[in-house]
Image 1 (tube, rainbow, N blue to C red):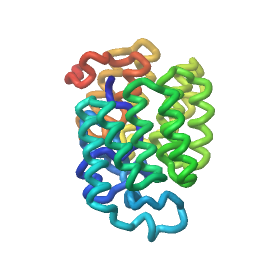
Image 2: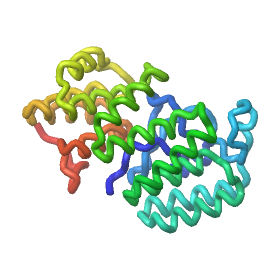
Image 3: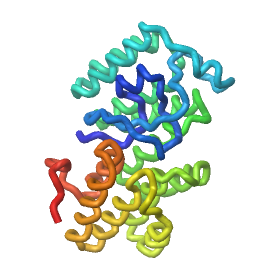
Image 4: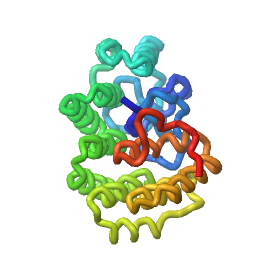
Amino acid sequence: MRTFSLLVTLSILSLTAQRSICADATATPSASPALSTPVAGTPLNLSGDSSSTGAAAAQEKPSPELLNKYREAAIEMEKKNFDGALVKVDEAQKIAPNNPNLENLRGAIYTQKKDFAKATEAFTKASQLDKKSFSPKYNLCELLFLQKKYPEALTQFQALQTEDPKNNLVKYKVFLCLLALDNKPEAEKLLDKMDPFDELPVYYFSKAAWDFKNANGTEAKSWLVSARNIYPPQKNALFVDALMELGYLPRDNPDAPVTK
């Protein structure tokens, strides 16, 4: 299964740099190609204090043992050894039993296994452990999108957009849900508000999706060419999976060079 746009910190580089899974979707994503793509923001809290009682707890450096277990889980997930990754998460949770980041990681692993019920359970628990965290809320919306439950996904993404109106990744998903539901008038209104100079390629991928939806594959591919010429692969990777989920790009070779 291809990488989902689940926001979960899996890059070893991100771990060692203490970067977190948070709401700033305008930041540069991780370059880890086979993993769900994180976004940068507040420091990763692997300290075992899952409450949001203040920034000090989140700034605490996790123990080397916990960090190693988290890293090992990420490596196993990258190798598609999902059961092995879950074992490493279990081991990490013995060190930090109520850590929301570990539950978020567990949810991402279950999503890769297509066990959406357990993924929902994990993301819900992560959200309950840290009610201010953007990541598990987004991931719960994303699960609905992956299951093609577009009316429910649209409702949840719109609610998340109300909480974070400047988040262009959420705006992109709202737009795609509208397209999937054939609500072109509302989708076009949203498309007209998108910024071609944004730090993320949301405008270009949205234009591509619009043209794919309207059976204009040549123009759609030209927008993808533009995105690849303007933005680095790490940023484009955050958006390409959704086009595959909608059937606009092939799953067998989605990373092949796009030609006009």
